[in-house]
Amino acid sequence: MMAPSALASGSTHQKVTILAVFALVIYSTYHFLTFYGLPTHVTSHESTASAVEFHVHPSRLPPPPLPQGGGLPVLELDLPLLTDIPAPYYPNVVPPIVHYVMSMGEGDPRPLQYFQYLAIRSALKNLRPRLVLIHHRPGAAPHGPWWDLLAPYVTLSPITPPEEVFGIPVIHYAHKADVVRMQVMLQLGGVYLDQDTFVIRSFDDAGLFTEPTVLGMEADPYAEKMEWEPGGLCNAIIVAKPGASFLQRWFATYRTFNESGHEWAEHSVAMPWELALTYPQEVTVLNSRAMFYPLWSKSDVKRVHEPSSTGLRGGGWDFSASRQLAYHAWESVSLPYLERLTPTSVARGASSFARMAQAFMGPEDRRIERQLAMAEELTGR
Image (cartoon, rainbow, N blue to C red; front, side, top):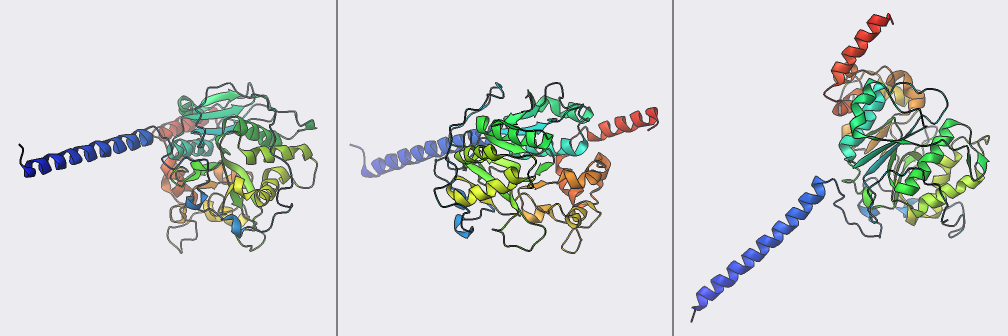
């Protein structure tokens, strides 16, 4: 008969072995998820917004403009299948897909510019998507030396620009792009980004990928308002699951679209804010410092792009200290700065923007810069 001490020793050994195997399984599972870029947060259907950085709790929002339960119902929209490209699908989390919409207007597109190249590289680096879709007008695919560097990592998705939405004419290319982004996000889900948006931190690490829909506040630059009184929710960044109910409600509001109306951004900025007040349980709202700050005012654009030094008194904006998730560069007003960017100017880091963008430079940037300089000399430009 085995001695009691030996029995105790054997029992202890078995417990240690079981614990070791259990720990190995946990480690292996986590390693698999992180290696393949899958979200590591809770993936239940219930919102985990309380753990999301920059989240504004619904209790801090003003009363809705419509009676609770009123407004437009969730619609089973009969949308056209815009793309048949195979895409990853995860029913309980935001899928690892990034969308860009380009060249919805007429005419030949310009070569992809350096700032656009850096913006797409920022998404590749910090979102680690399995699929990056460039939705563009047929025959107007991106091109140029900066595009050539990105081409192996993205997928072209030709889409005919819409002529109408719910029977209402859509004329301007910006509104065509608004409609396309809504349709592809409803169909596939993922992360939509404007091509002047820089992803500074991982959205997954910030808890965004377990939320049905995530949008960020666009502050009002003309008034000192509280964070729950923004100019609207900006559609330059949309994070959502496929078929999200909030996106269905939002797209359904295009039944009242009027391109000649007095509010240019009524359906792209103002309408989602009104819906968020009415249906706060369907959308996670991030405050104005999460993605869309500094703003598009003249003083803020200069603050970001003019030479400055680091530190509190440097006169610029510290994108690292702010801990913000992204920066929308407001191309419509900052283009004179953006189109002058080169690998050399970014590497020098004279401005807040350049210091932020340094992290997204590629190993071939300087070579392409030299080639472009030589080509300009040969053509006498």
